[in-house]
Image (tube, rainbow, N blue to C red; front, side, top):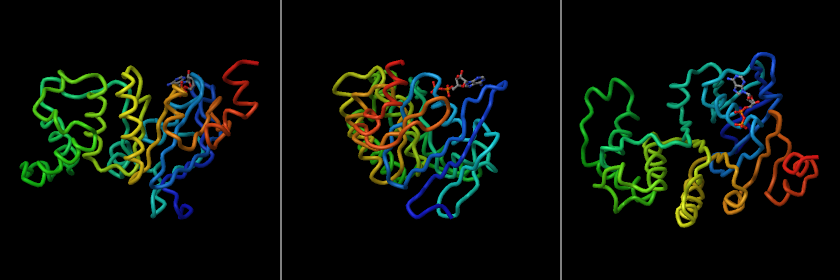
Length: 249
Ligand code: ADP
């Protein structure tokens, strides 16, 4: 199996698009309750990496292994990978604007059930409690009756994270969570991500170095489809190769 304390083990993956190697022999491990920031310049391969982990893109080489049973995720499709416990939040929120926060979260709970169970599913007291619990976790406890369309940009992002939490993911991939947020929202988002990573793995793809600094976690620097450096933010930003990539040569 994967090493003790490893939830996801990505080993030696590569993928080419029309002969261009977007991911080049990339390896990446994350533990079950770990917060990790993935940074790198445009075109470094961050999106393609997440596409591979979520099964949207198949690598030409390498392995992607998951969990205690060392499951080969390359044999699973996107829906199966999501059900295995990998949730992904894209930058643009996709909440239902004309529905309340409660109904958005309830729909997410319903969607998290296996397809045949949905047929017999009725919202019960347990589901109401779970919706309240998720809303509190993402800072929306006092917003439950509001239409999602009336929420601030930051609140919409938190609602979408809440909708992902309905699926009880063991690994959450989050793309630029703080983009477009106010300072107060960014601080709340930092606290939320740190809190979530106490009980699950969270990978944050981020451009904003100030935000990465606040996350205060291990950082993986991607460049030309490979891991260029890994460690604390202070460690990687002191690396000459990282400085070259960010400041030009
Ligand atoms: P990042 O998210 O770090 O900006 P990407 O993963 O989007 O980087 O892209 C990595 C490289 O792969 C880029 O040079 C990009 O142009 C290329 N690329 C990504 N997806 C495709 C695709 N579907 N077809 C062709 N080239 C692609």
